Image 1 (tube, rainbow, N blue to C red):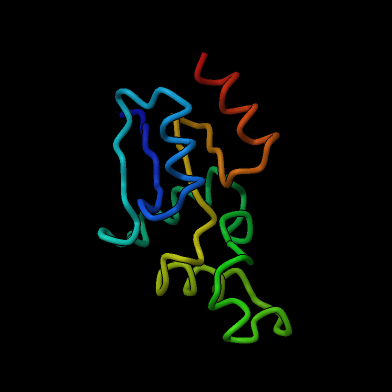
Image 2: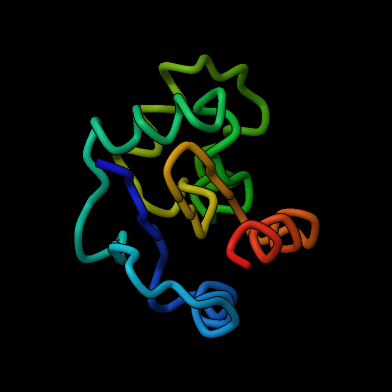
Length: 117
């Protein structure tokens, strides 16, 4: 079965804008605060993105609070942080089959727009 999923945060203005900007008909929408990401979902994301690092948000408030910028994090550490606190997931994460789009950078959204045409 082809996965068509969007992982987002409903209180995030950027996520809301992206959900309104593109047509996600046929995609499963996962609101990550109300429904935690499973280890299996995160593993699938990592396989598509290439690493847990690619899915990790350094903008999360707890990133600074916990002093993580001064720590060398392993892939396992990053995985555990994302699983323990949804704010560590760079968002939104959009999966369409074997393609993944992570975050809200302009080039990423342009690639998503081309892909969804």
